[in-house]
Image (cartoon, rainbow, N blue to C red; front, side, top):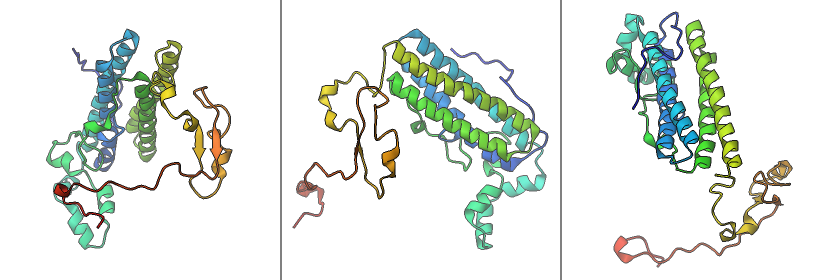
Length: 284
């Protein structure tokens, strides 16, 4: 079960309304790397985890924390939309894009410079489960594969992207309350990045998972001669200087090989004759 406490994990009220910034802040709620995504990602990973208990408990801990982060952002948006100048709210209730385009402005400039109409029309001055341009949050954003190494690697990326966006929004604001609240969320993203990196190393130490993912697939079943080849498939050979083109591979199971002029190893592509009942165009 889940138990809700009325106090927020952390929060500082913004000093003044800013409905335009509130629209931008929606990205941290319902965007691909927003709090809704990591909340659902970590919870489903935890619910799908069988053992060991420490990993399952950790995933449910952090997933539950992310629910609280959404509540923090929802409160922040409510304060930013509240008491916005009446003319701003009235204009937000109409569609300014048509007028703007007819007047020679780009649609994207109008979208960026105007209040989110949904904050005024649909949510009554509250947050919505959408990104900053109103696109609804999508369950396809999450990764919960059942393989902890694959999931934890995805989690590092999710936290890196989330922290990057939070830092960008921090720099876009001049409101001390907004910056203080975001500074706390940025700090939690720091913790969570390190948490997943530590969990990856613990999976290795526990002998549960390793690289490459999935580590228990029999290596003799893959074409091992291609397992550590880097193919130079663009103009120039600058890629040759990277650590991915020479030396030991990160999984410790091979040596990188650089192919400067690789040749295809398969035949010319030729699809079979289509089924006449599909009415695809035949060869002749």
